[in-house]
Amino acid sequence: MSSFLRMVAEVREETRIQDGMSHEKIKQYEFAMCDWEIETMWAIWLGLKIPWLERFVGMKIGNSNRVIDAYGAQLMACGGMTGGHWTKRHDKCKDFLYDLMKWAGMSPKREVRNEFARYIGVNVVTGNQIPNHVNQAQTQQDLFNGLTVKEQEGYVPDLGGKSDKAMPGSKKTFLGEVKTVNGQVSNLYIKASDRRQQTVADRCKTIDKDIVKRMRDLDRDFNGTQGGGGPCETHLRSKFGKMREFAFGAFGEWSVDVDILISHCTRQIAKHEWMYSGFRCESDAAHILKQYVVKRLGVLSLRAVAVLLSDRRDQIGIGDDKENKKHVLGARRLADKAALDHAFMMRAYRV
Image (cartoon, rainbow, N blue to C red):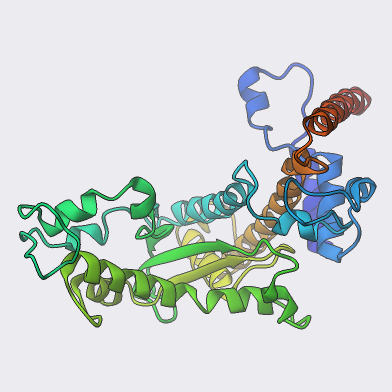
């Protein structure tokens, strides 16, 4: 808790916009933290009611059967909503890990494309090898290339990199999947029975199994391999080993594999930078860097949940009635304008 308190103060000071700053300088502060964000992050982390959400309790969420609760559980878990808010939260976590791996010199990759597609054969498909094909001149690669981009995304891991030491179960060259648990009222949390980090651990149990299943499906559908052991699955296990399981929960927590990656990254950073950065030894540098990264990621993971809830405000109280929707959206615009005016007032006081 003390680390989080110090981190909030550090971020607030670093994100303070002052008069006389150039446009380029101000752009560095585009992630400045607002008062409502800190307030919401504290409430999420401590399991308290979210102050700005209390006024909406009992109101309907979009066209779903869910209604608002003061803790944001229903608003966060509600599916079928526009805006891609779950994806935005997922990408924030993924981008943080990518940047950390890049700092550590792990030659990271985001959205590792063509890693498995290149193991699809170029032989002409025979009539009884793969069902439902039409063009007799089509190759196995042609069939895969005919999939939509969204369909091909299912075979693309989120992250890839190379560490100087292999992580448990994986090779030095590894792949990873980032998953976010967005349902505070989902079975994952209900079954956790208040056990610390149990929810993200349960979410991780299916990640490696899912990628193996996808590779087997890829081999079956495009290589004609039945029962596993095809070129794509073999490449997965022989080159990468176990898939790294990077899961983030709804209360700022994350999985063991995230901690392992942080340890590997900070150790590699310290190995190359400890001397000219002024540390006493490599071990001291690694420990201090790890504390710094954990604090940063802790703030980011909680803030991503707070922003997700805020971004979904437009769906509160909106049903099928157009007049009701118009009234609620108008109220949102007025509230946002008032918040902006308040921010400018507070900025004037701080200068």
